Amino acid sequence: MSKLLSPLAIKNVNLKNRIVVSPMCQYSAKEGFANDWHLVHLGSRAVGGAALIMQEATSVSAEGRISPYDLGIWCDEHISFLKRITTFIHEHGSVAGIQLAHAGRKASFDTPWRGRKQVMEKDGGWKTFAPSAISHKEGDELPEALNIEGIEKVKSDFREATKRCIEAGYKVIEIHAAHGYLLHQFLSPLSNHRTDEYGGSFENRIRFVLEVVAATKDVWPAENPLFVRISATDWAESGWSPEESVKLSAILKEKGVDLIDCSSGGNVFYQEIPLSPGYQVPFAESIKKETGILTGAVGLINDAAQAEEILQEGKADLIVMARELLRDPYFPIHAADELNDKIQWPEQYERAKPRKKG
Image 1 (cartoon, rainbow, N blue to C red):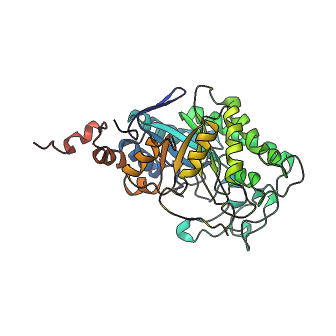
Image 2 (cartoon, rainbow, N blue to C red):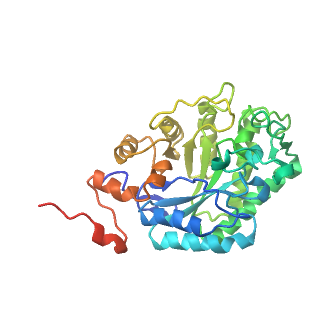
Image 3 (cartoon, helix red, strand yellow):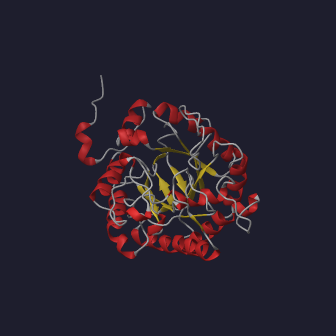
C-alpha cells in the first residue's frame, strides 16, 4: 500500500488516508450561515475520497470575518446547517474538521473576484482589531489595538465557538494562527508593537496563541484532535521566523496540540515568497524532526507521486491540498490509480471503475 493512501489514527479519529482538504474560503455565506454551496463543495470532496475535510476559516465572531461572506459559528443558529454538512461527510467515510479563525486587521475585505479591497465602515464594513494600531497596507483603515478586555472577548469567542463545533458534529478543530490573521499578527514583531505582556519577547508574543489554545481545550473533548495552522515564516526581514516556529511548535505539543499545519506568509504585503512545487514542505519537515509533533505539508503539492515522496521521506504525516482538490474533487481516486493502489469508491460510482486489463 502507498503511504498516501494508508490510514492514520490521531487520538480517537481514524483517517482512512493521508489526504486532507485544506480550508479554502468560498465567500458564499450570508451573515455567517452555510448553505447548499458549502454542502456540495465539502460533500463532493468526501465523496471523492479525501480522509479529512477541513472547512474553511469559520469566524468565531461577526467582526472576525475576512469578508461579509465568510462562514461563521458565533451564534447557535449557525449550527443546524453545519450539522447537515458534517453528517453528510461522516456518512461517506470522511472526517469533518473545521478551522476556527479571527481575521484581525485583515477583516472587512471584499471577495477576491471583486478586487479584495477593504470595505470601509462608511460603506458597510466594520471596525477591525489587531495587537497594535498598524494597518496591513497603506490605504487601509487603521485597526483598533485590542485592550485586555478585547483579548478576553476573543478568547471567550473561541471557547464558545468550540462548544458549537461539538454540537455541529466536527471531529477535528484547527486554530488558525497563520496567513496574517489575528493570532499570527500577535506572533509577528512586524504587526505586534505592544509593550505589555502580549508584546516584545518571543514568550510574550506567543502568549495569546497559547491562551486561545487553552480556551479551546477547556471545552474540546480530550480524545478529539486539535490542530494549529501557522505561517512558519513571514518571508520578510525581522518578521516571524522558521526558528520561532519550531520553538512554538514544541510548546504547542507540550500543551496538547496534536498537529501543526505548516503554511507561510500573509502577514505583510511586501513579503517575498519563492514559489515552487512543495516550497513549504521544508517547514513541515523541520518542525516534525525537531519537535516530534505530527505535521501537515501544504503548498503547490499537485500530484500523487509528489505527495507520496513527501510521506515516504518522513517530511510530513498528512498532505493538505487546496487548489488541486478544487480542480479535481476525485483526486484520491485518481491518485490510487497513479500509485497502483486501491481506494474504496462510493457504491453509486462503482460502475465507472476501469476494467482490469487481461
